Image 1 (cartoon, rainbow, N blue to C red):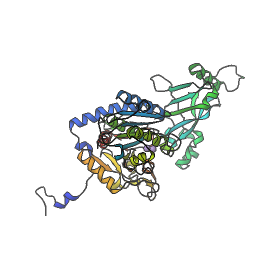
Image 2 (cartoon, rainbow, N blue to C red):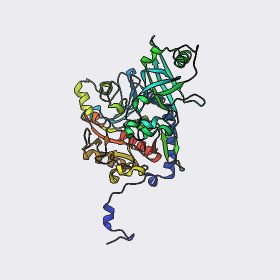
Image 3 (cartoon, helix red, strand yellow):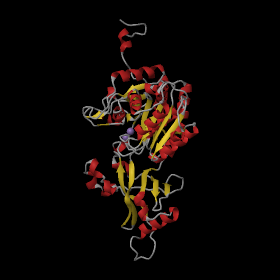
Image 4 (cartoon, rainbow, N blue to C red):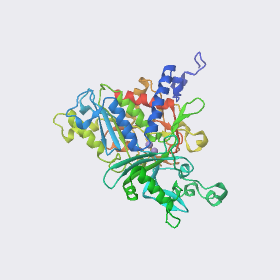
Length: 470
Ligand code: MN
Ligand code: MN
């Protein structure tokens, strides 16, 4: 049996992943393009977790958000934010419904893989001044060789004052690099397994070569670097012990492909979800339920430390908000709010890479350009350590996105036995709230130049907005 288009009626029953570009009108494509221009600027000014917090805070202040600590009571429509230790940020727009009915929460992370300077980084060897690094997060070390790197961070001096550094971003400014071994002499290296070919202790950054002083002086190039740092920033070598200096790719993000359909840039995991959720919350005026975003640090190293999602900063800020909404606040009121909340864990997922299709299971892998990705569970080798959203939650979000014209798809992180990964979903779920992973698919995740589709970025923003408003 076929219909007048030659289709069997049963064909209507089948699910097909949609391409978001096919579903976007000319007006929506223009809106996506404009949104992505702003996003690229954000990526360029937010290359570290501290810079991402500062950029997010400036954006929220511009959108009328006030520091939570400046408020006594909160009423529907109030917009507040709070920052902890310059590395995490929580923003909320108070909803019409009583707090006890729960919040709509989006949680993303601000940190990205990078090279951190060691506490005693500077040394001289063979007439070159170099900086020792300790990599942060899951990187393929070879990707960090022979690329221009910029130095970003803070030095807290002995007198307690802080110096902020950004070197290598302005046109004409020097950059830094870790030189790679020439192929002519790489016979032994090329015979090694890729994981062993670049030892972590070889990720030393070239930083100076003009000596100072007389020829019999020791470490003349190192001293020249110290002299320059002292002249520019008033710091001495011991100050580097109380510093957080990160080396990140020196390039800006740019459009990729002849049609400019993609954005390539550093740190899209997870600043693409930071930016889309930030824009979404800033555009809430009087939501039904309180709309809250949490931008956490340290996700790439296990959400540890007092700025990671495992710490109490989130629950403390939630308590501050609830106590300003609920007369006669007590701990039970907070627990009820959290337990009735619904959260999206906003993080990236892997997009199908045609160059390495053997590691993906095609039916269940996200595709670039097919919309925001809903990930029921993450984990590795048997869903280990995942949150696993309930079918009811998947259904709620699917229905919401369908009714709001949000193009979405599902995604698993690769073949079952191939590896895996995690997000902050399980930590949010530990507060007894329902959580679903929902974000943007990337090619080249954790590389120095990650790729996302503009259509997916826009659909993620549109989805987050629909969620916060629901
Ligand atoms: Mn991530
Ligand atoms: Mn990551």
